[in-house]
Length: 187
Image (cartoon, rainbow, N blue to C red; front, side, top):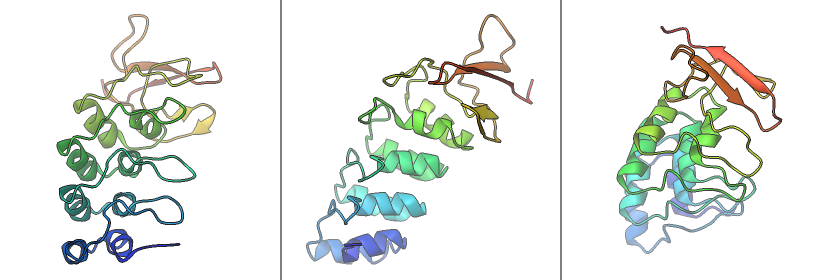
């Protein structure tokens, strides 16, 4: 895997050991064989204290991991780790940063069942109408069905209503051009 001791400590959430490793000269943004930094691993396990240690040491929030080109912010949001998302926001993460396909963290989390992470991103200024290349709709919110894949979850109140319908009625367009509609269980 090519992990450094800092990778291992971050991936296990051992935030008490990390300052000692950093004081000995560990590279805070070292990449493992999958091009993940210790920050990516801390975000993967949802360790807010480990994330805070790495950010205080100057970890680069803009770095993306190898195969999936995912930022640490996207990882935390997809996993629903709202405290980790908010820690990254406090440290100045660009919530509207785009990947090679023009997608943001909000795009990444829209397919998950993580309404809290969506709310945290939107509160931090994420653009709900951002469009990636090939994306035909700007509506972001985890609907019960998204592009033909079953997703149980809540709709985000930040997804705007369409055609004058009630605030609890949502319509989102998938890249395939098909429309999905859902109504929030809340009035």
